[in-house]
Length: 370
Image 1 (cartoon, helix red, strand yellow):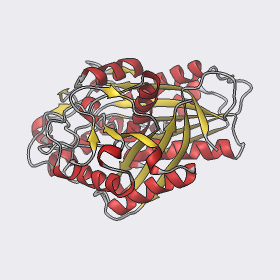
Image 2: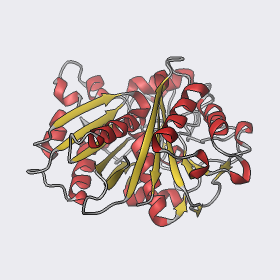
Image 3: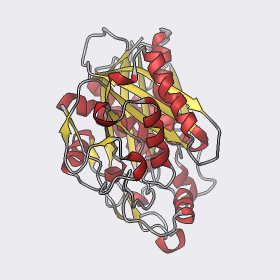
Image 4: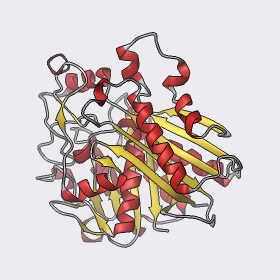
């Protein structure tokens, strides 16, 4: 059974949801000087940060999460006293930045955002945090649909949040041959990934519920290929894509747009292109493909839900933003219809949203206009 999205809120380096989408349409890039850690020691000098002083603020991920939760719950018109509301939070890093700054000073509940959720939805029937790398938001979206299908909740708030951490930055600096100044998804000369601060929250409800509806989640396909600790796997990604269409009862030819994972790394981009070639039509018959990380960076566990928010705004506006930072398409993507240089009208059909994480945890969501 498909479920309705009653509200969506995000925070990125470009701003809240409307400002982020406007920035994407304008081709804005939120990259700037790194504010967390020593660039010389990390070999990373650039980040996609939120707020001029937020890099020094403790518990930043929770603060961003709380802002999104509050906005989404209010926009959906939920009755916090009478409705059975579950809250599922996806994250890759939790409050690791705070732990790095003050080891041993964090209560476990604060690491998992329990206090943040309680402040916004104090009577939540269930609160679950899923630390599942960069596809965490997609995994909680799938769990939310299961809860609603089973009748175990009247509404489910799915959320995600992550901020830059020194440990993740050090890993990026170790594998990058040289520093990169921005993310260039699917570009022949891409230089690697950079982290972005981000958070998102969506409210999912059963179909037919009175109130606002931004779009419908038809299905989320999942896979965990465990092929490699960090490298993506074409077969594992393909399984997630085909699982989404099987669950939705739809065909790949029904899709008009793909919001890709697109990390701008040596491994992800050609692998994602191969997976799209394996399942979806290509050439003139294929969907258009966009990606957002060139504008907002890689927001880790929040990336999947930020992609979904962009998909919803594309469905509402009838326009697809271009891939910010894409100059020359990599050879593996030459048969794909990347949106380049300027936005283009939204083609008819479904929107496929991709999210892949370390360890081969993959989540692919199919969305439809209300």
